[in-house]
Length: 75
View 1 (tube, rainbow, N blue to C red):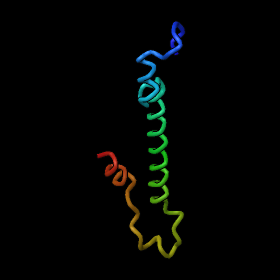
View 2 (cartoon, one colour; view 1 turned 180 degrees about the vertical axis):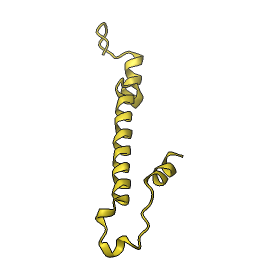
View 3 (cartoon, rainbow, N blue to C red; view 1 turned 90 degrees about the vertical axis):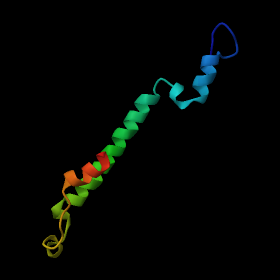
View 4 (cartoon, one colour; view 1 turned 60 degrees about the horizontal axis):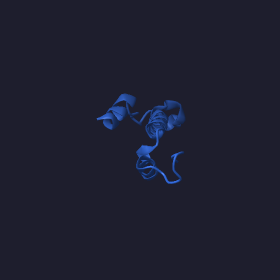
């Protein structure tokens, strides 16, 4: 709040309503995106790990290439 007056300034009112009015908004969004990317990469890596498949299945299952899976997301 404004220290000179008891009521908030117009800028303070706007910052209170709009999420991007907060100075940490962009940082929070970037952290969330990084978290989502890490989770997605973890899922992709679990799909291409050959040691998680039973031996009988390994020979008949074509493992996706990690780069192919990631390229689809990045486009």
